[in-house]
Length: 87
Image (tube, rainbow, N blue to C red; front, side):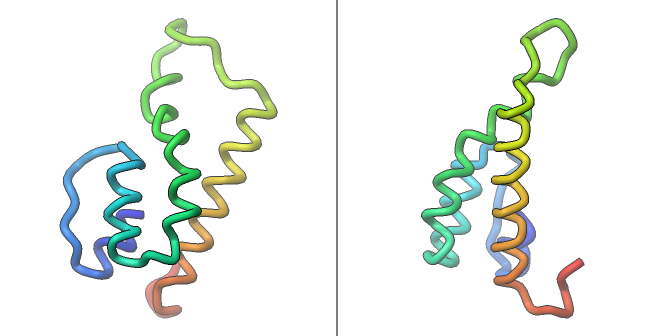
């Protein structure tokens, strides 16, 4: 998401809040808004499981769903960038 914003010269602050970053992306490219709304739940992965013993890890199914959504978001956002800047 930050890559899309950087490509469009849109400022963003240092944050892991995907709602905030997603709103900025949607303001830049409204076509991604429905997908990025689904990303809101991924924000907690930035902190929820960071330290051992603090919280029980995600289930295998939860992990697969989160990774699948993250990969979908990545592919959609990369498709919005020119081919010569994609990894």
